[in-house]
Length: 608
Ligand code: FRU
Image 1 (cartoon, protein in one colour):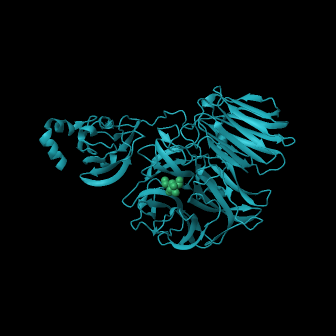
Image 2 (cartoon, helix red, strand yellow):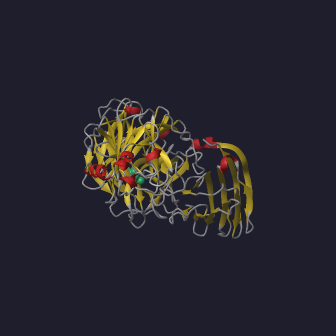
Image 3 (cartoon, helix red, strand yellow):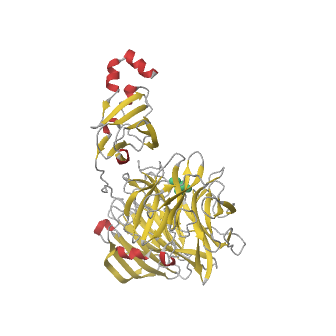
């Protein structure tokens, strides 16, 4: 008010234009101060489009409904140019007075300067928001959000033939912020339907990762078969909260007693399952900075008892521990437990990655298997740079243990060359156990069988190729911008290295090297395409083949900006993003000496 008076005295003309500047029809902008503005809605339209410039800082927006604070969120409001606009859905406020009270991000020193913000004239009201894909790198057969930023998959459950996938989502921009649970569903794990927003931030915090389970015993009192969600309410503290759904996960009602569990130190990403042996819930919580997983039990998900912890000083410790999961799998008729622990940074090739421990669990305590030296070995679930926050579906059918990861890396996820949306999920993967040549038990990941549905035309089947010093090439399919599946076996003689190259006419290439001398397979994306958005992006990632007979196999899924590579039996998995300027069109094989490529198969794939 003081500032306004000053303007009234010294510059009445300026004041007349600075207050009540009109933006799009039905939107009125009033600058209160250099960095404080009101945007009033006084027209009709389902959505208010908010103009974003990614390189600016966040503006704080208080959404006032009939003069009362409804909620606060953050948007990178455009300062000098509009990159894209994001919708604020006004449907819930129909018939009410809506005002955005904005603490702007533009570092202006006067109202006159504030008016220069590129956003003010671009707030518009509209009845439709176009989500048609505008970007060449958006995957054709991986799950992505319609728009906005996505990180961890979470809260996944299966019920009545439907796979539910929730995810960490920013509805107001393509960088991390305003964590909300977005929701997609699928009957085949491949075709995803975008569902309404599932859980939105509230007075105690934004909605971080967590899990869902079906309460078949009505232990929480929300009804038999209610879907229960546990998540972290993130604010100054990280607290654990509870919500339930009576419509199969479409919408959730938050528990009025939230938060249900708090610790003084950072703890997040609660993951639960009903333990029929002990008649209790087991909950795993990432004690992030302490780099350990806490094991808790609860009869009703409302009162929790801390039972034990695992991990201090064990496994990879060069980053925070996040997003745990614990589940049993059988090997040779014996039940073992797998503890997934996501780690950021500290992954084998920098940044974020998923490690796991195999061991036993008695309902309260997890005990990891040790190696021949009595040490707990560090094991990685995927040997690429772009598989993080991996967790599994609860209540999956046929005893399946199906996992999905976030197909990116915290090192550069916000900088990859997309804007309408950011980040995809990996293909769904089936998990099983196998015994390695060192006697240790490892986790195998194979693409879920539903991925076979993606195959369109069989372009090559059962072809054998001699890989020698001179490269032999085959064409990759051009349909749907080159999306395809490629599989083959490699047999090397006398430890000769084998090179498999994917390339395009711009000389961009991915080079895969099988080295039987040390039983590794490497993926080199240093010349794969665009990489200048981050110095951490160019990389060579290396996996053990878990074989020692000069043989390995490859099954590869190539989408517009990712390559997932698996051994056919799933012994290794390697997920890497790539941003070629045009699709890879040639696949060639060569070797330092002599090698055989057999059973080559190439399929073009259907785009979703
Ligand atoms: C992992 C993570 C989680 C957290 C979420 C926030 O990527 O940091 O620990 O719940 O992302 O979006």
